[in-house]
Length: 101
Image 1 (cartoon, one colour):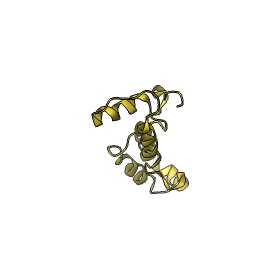
Image 2 (cartoon, one colour):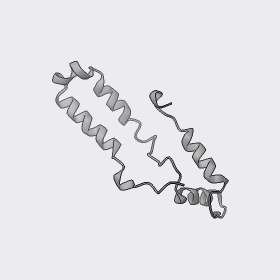
Image 3 (cartoon, one colour):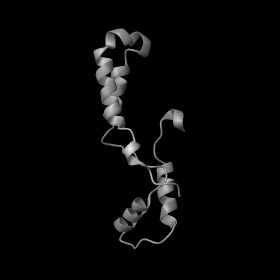
């Protein structure tokens, strides 16, 4: 297992998108030629997904594994139990943008 994720350094993606949308709308007349007229709509479409997705580490943490056991009503095991591999598979199967396949 890799080192635990440093959640303090994970960017606030939704906040960045909101910031970008405000700037695009503010300067739309000067940047639409370079970035396309549909940029505000594309950012808004991404922001509408905020309630459907969360950012998770690629490598499941022990807390994630323990939470899986707790939800299943079983006791956690020491090391990397089969559930570790199930969580890894679930993360790997998560939807990805077309260019990240």
